[in-house]
Image (cartoon, rainbow, N blue to C red; front, side):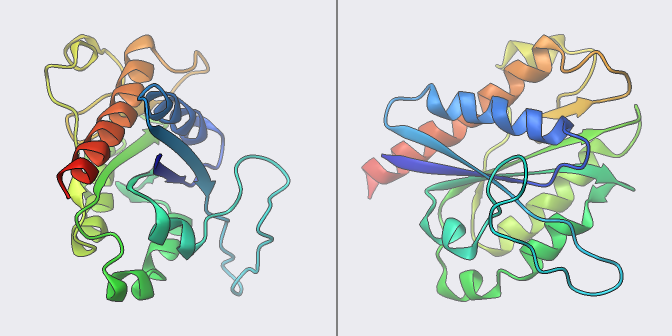
Length: 197
């Protein structure tokens, strides 16, 4: 059984909802299992020491989760066209994983949500790819052969799923489909890579 780690930060729940749809896409592939993990908030006053089990949502991520996964999806709300500080803080502390090469050659994808139409979805997705490339991961995007990518009038990019949380209507059908598609593509790619080795 391959494990796809879905690692995210979510302040108001939109990114967490996306993570759950990505997990559904992973779990739809035989031989694959989704593992949902969050990163905790960071404090602007001092380093925050967080419990490993938060009061709600997924368990907080550990470096062992990264070392032991067969594929990775990372997600964050967009903050000024970039990933949120808590996700960046977690990634900045993965040096030991980088030294070990544990993520090299594994598939990875990215996802984001924004509260405004031109809030920097694509620049956020690109910013999240950079550390994954440094880890030697293989970036998996969304091809235009995914019908939802051509049909969407809300979120969705070839760089990865995105969601426009401008109003309270929730995710569009296309946004949900693109999240599931990324999960399935990550799982299928990880399975192919394992079979090839």
